[in-house]
Image (tube, rainbow, N blue to C red; front, side, top):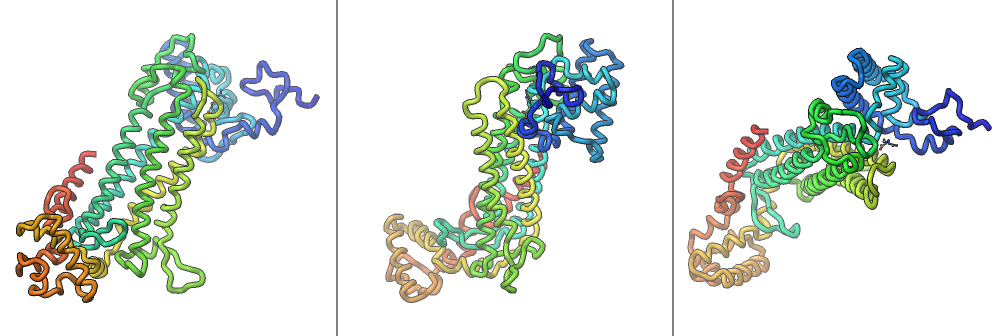
Length: 467
Ligand code: ARG
């Protein structure tokens, strides 16, 4: 039969096989088309493994030197896009190992001593995840810096604060930006925390049970800048919690970005007109000449779906898997890579976009002056003059109802009219009814006053300097 194996189509694992792999199965099981992006981590892991084999006397110095040189040459070839990736060789690991043996001969065949693709892929993936977390954290920091700058510039700009998307109380734009800063800060912390669990070395766990060779797992762990080797070989080759955790941390970050996006979309609408985005971050309509669409925040809002979908895929891939390694785990690569690239793009976009936001201060203030945003201030005023809060609430409710009927702002109601609602109201009420008076009055830690915004900005700068 034609599918009897010949030397030409022999697999690295082909010893016990009589027949060649079906072309369909070859295509179906191969991962090289997407895992080849792990090549630098694969090579880094192989160099560490080879040096360890040399150190414990399994390989000679000469063999180690040949392997390291060969791997370095292959790395360069791949970076220069001169490397030929072959589907028959299934994955990134066997493509590189096979190229190494072609290049240096016998020593190349010894590299896989005391190792399996199972601990190899787990190692590659952790090295990848670690470096991606570091990139993501840098992007978060840049985004936070942009938020701080904008908050400082707009520390006393007033806009309506909303609950239920109904005008609630006046807030400062700087305070609003610092709310985003806080969210991003928690995201940063979660990525850092996840990094601790990522940064363990599975190398040396081999297929699942460890190896009969006198390996030195601490040596490879240290060389690869891991904190320590994973403590159980079965767990080490099968654990993808770190991938799922990274995805879930990313999903929560995307939740925040989607919320911010929603606000930007609202704020750039003609009806709100609170802010303007740079032309370079918007697009037009092919039919309506007046349009300037906030495509970037809209897309980011939509990209939440990809990331949340990837997270769902990853957790579903792991569910019910028995110990130890199972091929199911090959399915983790594409969702993970996709979600990481998506998150990095979105964070980059936000850093750029926020530094370029132009505030339309008059429109914000004008909006804040409508909707009786200082009604709570009036109630607080009455309480300070001896009225109980519940009575004050009722009185101000009546005042608002009157103002709606008469089409007046609270500041436009004359004092002698206000006194009819509550005799303890005096001339000084008009200061507390202004937007400025309202935000300045909330002058405590975490409050919206311009002074507090500047304090928060200061604290934030110190925090970022310590990173
Ligand atoms: N491509 C595999 C993965 O992504 C690598 C490990 C394969 N191990 C094996 N025994 N087939 O998980």
